[in-house]
Length: 171
Image (cartoon, rainbow, N blue to C red):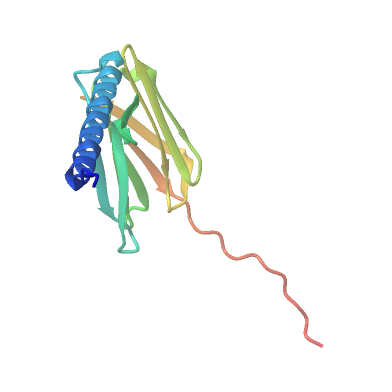
């Protein structure tokens, strides 16, 4: 009679856990290596901004200079935290962007009726974001100022155009 050694079910579990821990350790090491390559390693931030839109629904937006993606951190330009407020009484839309360390002369703002793009480069710090608007603005009415790391841009709301149509004669 031959004796067979029964396989221990915990061996497979243990080897699987060991492999998972090893992969996790490798992912953490890769993230640290990526962070060490970033010239702004002392300023990492990532978060979510939640606002209630004019329709009463929450609007969630990511911001920061790192993005967690499949166990790796993607480093890049910083996305400034932007707050949008609409003053119905005055008929204005105000964007407030936090951009500490940016130089006023290097900030670029480009606007269309439905979108505002903000970018700035200053040495090791660079900012870049595109803000879609659900309210039409008149980009020609822009008034911008930058003080103490805060960019404030105010636009007049664009009045809705009356619907265009053709009168149809009924026979």
